[in-house]
Image (cartoon, rainbow, N blue to C red; front, side):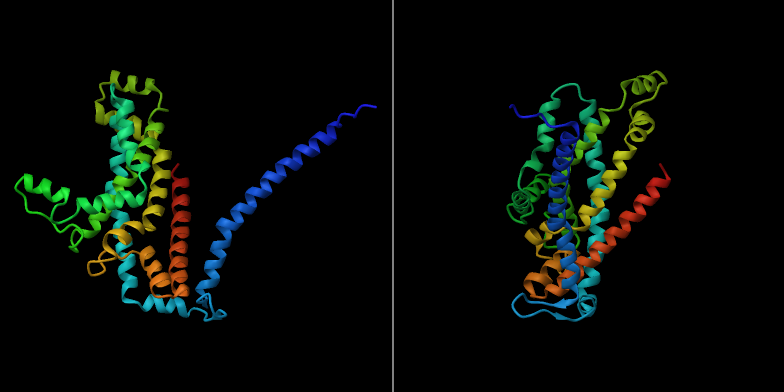
Amino acid sequence: MGRRPPSRRGREARRNLTAYGFLCAALICFGVFSWYPMVREVLLSLQENNFVDAPRWVGLDNFATVIEDPAFAQAWINTAAFTGLALLIGYVIPFCAAIVLNELRHAKAYLRFVVYLPVMLPPAVSVLLFKWFYDPGAGLFNQILGFFQLPGLAWLDSTDTALVSLVIVSTWMNLGSGTLIYLAALQTIPSELYEAAELDGAGLFKRIRHVTIPQTRLILLVMLLLQIIATMQVFIEPFMLTGGGPENATVTVAYLMYQYAFNFGNFGGGSAMGLMLMVVLIVFSAVYLRVSRENT
């Protein structure tokens, strides 16, 4: 006798089991790599733990230790300043670059490749490249200033320019991805809207104000939220370029968290810093989503 084909109920059961299997695998990966580190961070922030001896519960002592650190307030001020500058520079430039690329009629593919090129470089390579650019002696930026008979700057060694220098590096590293996202949003705008605006006598800036920005409002709001969350966690730029100096001018929350955990051996203090940063970002995201939802 031949094998009987599975019934309809059997096929549905097999399909559902397959779907639940994929769902469970995704949930397990998400729980292990996303939720477990967060739970572990909360536990570590309440413990004295060197991963050799048995952990000891210390309650909120780790939070008190990091708050009493003179670098704590400076780290939050620097992080807020970095985020504000990154929004002024890094939020506007990719959007303007996307508008220019969208308006071009020739060499579009080549220019998109040029804009996206920094994203393909490993972050460490990009940072080291700018370390040479900022060199006060033979650095590229001071050579350009010298060409125009301008005095050179101590880019990374001055408290006035160190943080701005890090913002420039971060903006250059993330310019390509932001530009391509904006460009994809711009290309979804119906061309009839631009044609109607041109018939009404609207110039370039009026078309951007009355057509482009309203039509890309959702992606602009999403990118604003993502950029604030990303810049609040800035680490690699101060870690590789300035080491938090000069005079703590570039110490950020993430960098201070690293110092507590791996330089001071205080994993509880580092976890307390990380937990405070996470709470701030969750509160900010909730308020932002509430406000943006009411205005859309």
